[in-house]
View 1 (cartoon, rainbow, N blue to C red):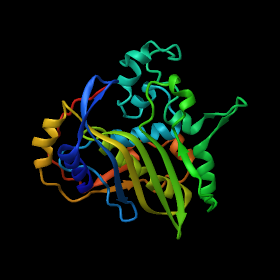
View 2: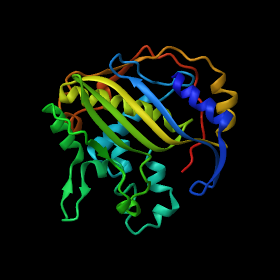
View 3: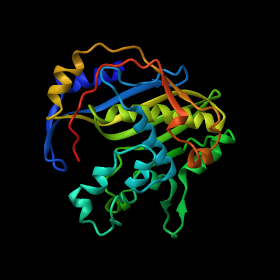
View 4: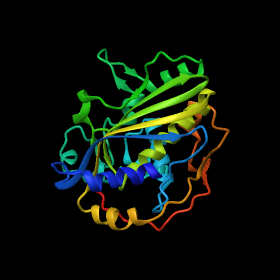
Length: 283
């Protein structure tokens, strides 16, 4: 929680104005931020200075792990974050690769579960990582990569958090996640929840204890229409203690995550929060 506030305050105080061509808005921007989450001791990094809708973040993560390519698939599991990018982004609506309403194209989890190879076959990156880690193997390259420049034009949005590198050390599983761009008021807590939950889930299904998760953000920003709410409302609130994430212990395999797992298999204990803040969303 404090890391979120520190980064937000840094952007407000030190950020440089940048014109964003995609959204047509200015944003205050800083380069490079490093966050760290204690998954081993279940210090769930859920924002407490406003109500955070953590279930949608976990639902989105499940969709990525399943390789979903349709906003309708995400809606069906409790996540609405892809509706606008799939159906309201003018450049994507006019893209010949778009396959009708709700289609997202080859983004995020599609790349993670079916990366196109030159020979016309597909690589399931996630299954390879799960299989390796389940056998106790770490080749220092257990990397889940969503960033495929060769197929950018085939999706509605380039991935923001694009790389997840898993490492086994001393009997524990660690995670380093890299994010190229972050809308801090709206997106960051989604991303924090997902990094934490991804390590917790991967440790659980591969039979390891979780260690720490490390989250690098390259470009962190606050849009001009979000600045006042962040500076004058959220940053003036006192945070509450971190809650804990509860995951159904019956989730034991990648197949479980692909088939029967729902949001009912996750819960948060001890979550205290201030009232919600309606930050504007930029498509």
